[in-house]
Length: 395
Image (cartoon, rainbow, N blue to C red):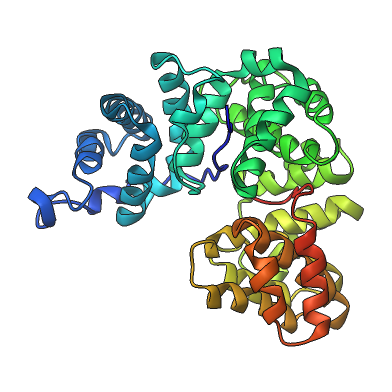
């Protein structure tokens, strides 16, 4: 088998009425369904259930699973579902990752997916929404086989993935699989992550924490059990170092604060009373939910107190410019120039690393050298060179 992974996950809050229903209706091309006719038919068939989220979700899971099974080609069908979801916007793309966890699990069982033939079912996409959720769902279904191969075997399979993004996603998916194997109790799942080695353990841990919040919310047949805390401070406070950072990275994404996190002041307020790695991890997690626009996030980070600017930058949604023109990626990293002098090295380092991940090593060759000064090029190059190491705060 050449690879295990697709991309991770973004699961967002529910909206009352899915906005996806507004697109692809009468008046569009191809009999009113737009360019993605099969995908639109599957989704719009669930329109009568749209006002009841649980019923709507169940309908979508059933219809989309039937569509994927009918095509006998999830590798090519999932990218079409991604494109349809983005074309209509609203509820569907915001919830497609977690929705597809269930579809991926059920598909793996129905299609008799194994570790040996998994490669043929993996979506040909780097999209962190529908495709990533489907891939992670298959990995969850294959959890017993992953456990049987042991940590060395699992790490070796992830290392075979084609791109750095996919290698990261594979390790994140292992975290989901370990969490399910241990009924979403973090400690034994994290112990399995540690056995993968220091480069993979933090990214595996993020998958464990991701699945923990899925279980807390009672989604995707995860194991909610007595004693689960719903407090990010309580959960993340149990860990140190990169595990604490990985925990906070998922925390607000899955359990948003009651008040909007829409300014530097709001970021600091939601993290008040914390210190050390807990404080910096919280700032990263709060930055992540500041906006889906990485440029707006960078503007917010540049207005933070200098000691928090780099932690804030680690929450910037760099994958949002993965497929953008190169000028947008250069514009994003150039925004580090607006940071305080003491934070600029760390900002250029992190953006160099993360942009090198989403371009699979190309940014080190073409992006970092194009920066204006040696003081910008140097940390960018150092960060880019570290892109095979643990990412920790990434999705």
